Length: 135
Image (cartoon, rainbow, N blue to C red; front, side):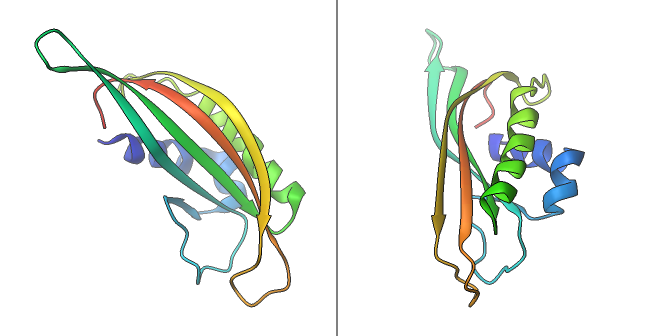
């Protein structure tokens, strides 16, 4: 499996998160026609590959951002707290994840894209993931 698939599996198997967002977990983008909140979007923005002396991939470090989306600031933060708990407790030998470290939290809002007058609040958490060769 790839790292994005592993992240999706982790998040979608986390009951406290799915209790809040149901199945609204997606990689990279969220369909603008989807009007239900809260939701969760994640992206792997960069992977640094370390090779051994023979040129084979030995280890990877990836930068990952997981964003909680909500109709209120509190709703987005509540989803973000469950994301943080799931990601920081993640150590999976099957996915070759050695360590997941949170590095930053960013909060902002955007104009609605569904015809509503309500803003969409975002709480994004950046992580550094130390993992094996799954890209």
